[in-house]
Image: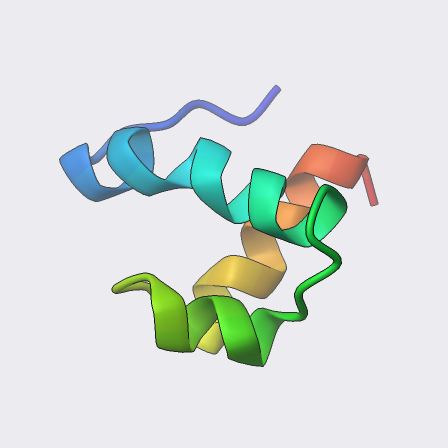
Length: 51
């Protein structure tokens, strides 16, 4: 299981997942809304989905 380590991960992980699954936003749009990069958002979504 993936463990959140940094303050940024703890602060934004759930919001990235919420924006993706509830609002239907893609990684690019999430990266513009939150202070996380496209790659980070993509990785967190993949981890959450178990891919």
